[in-house]
Image 1: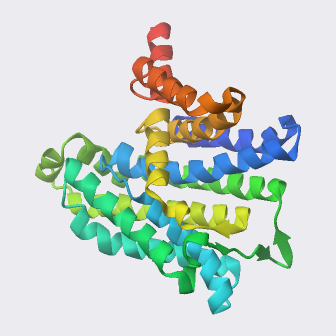
Image 2 (image 1 turned 60 degrees about the vertical axis):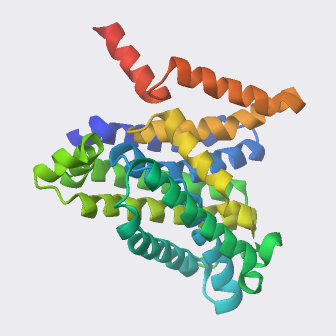
Length: 314
């Protein structure tokens, strides 16, 4: 019991309580829809943070895995007759397999070479989704069937709030276990110095691949959720700007902090809704806010505020 009241597990418990009580404070289904979107995008960032924040490997193509999950729950039921839940599992497995096969050569690269390689991978996914119109509907996309479980249709903002919220808690718990395990310690050593990690006997290629595959599975599950929630999937789901959005969420909230990623996702989902009052200046205001945050909180929101709190206590 004590392990759940300290360290990363305390954060998981706090997140579970927040997910449980938040609907009581939300006045309408519109806010539940926004909260569901936050849960979906935060799930991607929790997985991406394992790769960037702990393993130190930059990826600019994770929207591709997001798109794999999204198109799996569209193509599986429509063309293959699979139940939506089985298509979701298949999409996550396919994304993990692709990450395993692609990650072995790509993760040998470092720095900006790795960033460019993952960028190319993401662009390749987007091109396939846009051009294979016989399967994907082309640029117009395709409708996505509803998720049915035990005879119940999973639709509506309230239902998807609970699906995304519970999935986010489970995803954060899995990430906390990985971070607290020998795998997490190996990833942190690789982040600090790959050369030093190799000297210590750590199989650098293996652990980087583990982080890459895990983050791809997180992204695919979240992509499937978004597709079923919206009822439509288009190639923009796997576009380059979506990948940049994921990385921005992770950096803004704080790399190396699971809950920083959740805060970053919440901020980037909420701010466009709040800034609509500025109309034509919405994107300018959003950019200025992000610049100010990164100037005054360079480590990200959560790590910087946590460091400030520790400094004040000392």
